[in-house]
Image 1 (tube, rainbow, N blue to C red):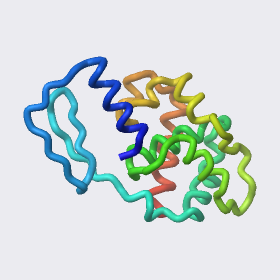
Image 2 (cartoon, one colour):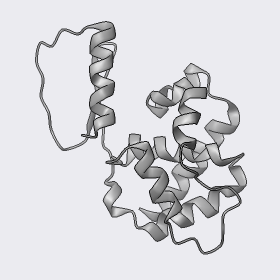
Image 3 (spheres, helix red, strand yellow):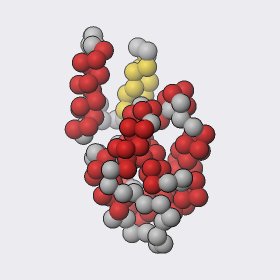
Image 4 (tube, rainbow, N blue to C red):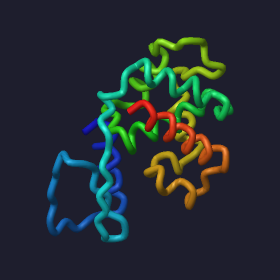
Length: 154
């Protein structure tokens, strides 16, 4: 579990409190608790995505990017569906080091993901909750296009 994820859990516990009656941890996927109901969402392994594949995904979806901050959407997809193991800063460095076939119109600069999170608090939530928490149409469209491109390469 990343340090960022641990910090999130601690902050939520401190803010809301929690009663734990039974806790079971497994590596078979991510278990999400929504209003006391358990749901299982199998995540894919980020390590199985090559750098070349990620670069292709970004180039393929560039027409739906509106700026450098669009990389925050990809970060959240990787976090929520591909078990991305590192923090935002590491992700930004990873994106800068990808072997792009051609230079993308928008690039992932250092600090852009954290800045985008500050401006769009829904990004701290799982992507499945974005629409109901105020994500705009272009964000949701980019999510869908990136999901398709990632699925094609996984």
